[in-house]
Length: 326
Image: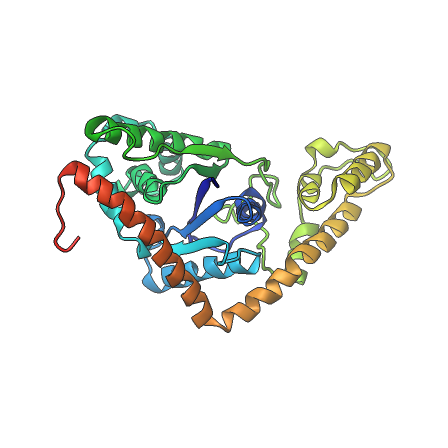
């Protein structure tokens, strides 16, 4: 039986190379192997985006991005979080069995507040909504980076709390599926992030992307001297695009000396365009077919909601919650 895999993406801005190699590429590859559900987390985005028109557009942008890079709606379920209202109902029910102490241990909450984000209840309770997202479609696995493993463990804990109160196996306890992507550096050498202003957008024009690539921070090692690929920001990006054979060739060139960082940057710009140029063209075509994109999201929402209703029937019955006409 195929495992059910769920991933969520916040519509918080233009998706970049770090998003692609950190998550999107695995999501697209997994659609042939797993029962794949991908939701656009527009409820979560309300913690940072409070402009209605902007949120609507960013939500569509995520759908466009995924369809352009190869997500097939015939293989994977792509939907808006808000098209499954059972998610917020389950969030409340989970909050009644979850201790405040669990949420206070969330590292991501502390990090975001430390970086200046408002300490709202939405941010504090983020893990409960995230747990509901995962549990509402009976997910088996959730692909995440190491920095998100705690949230999946918290989800399993909340499912365990609910099952402990109301009955064994009512909610499936998911597991984290660690991806093998390294942290993708931005043009300044720090982790690539929209909020840091150091990102290369997946669908940037070739000229703009090349300009950013050529500005990637490097050290001052002379051209003729050997260089260390393991500490080079350009190489860290290059190896995401190259075959193992080409990667090995570049390692040899680094260690041999006689090569400038400009050579590596030019090759990276070529590979960027080879990978994302066709996707950019596909996205431009999809922008002109808004009805198709909406149909994909609506159908995905119907499919996800059908699964959510099954889960909520079990949950409501166990809790004693009655809904007229249900």
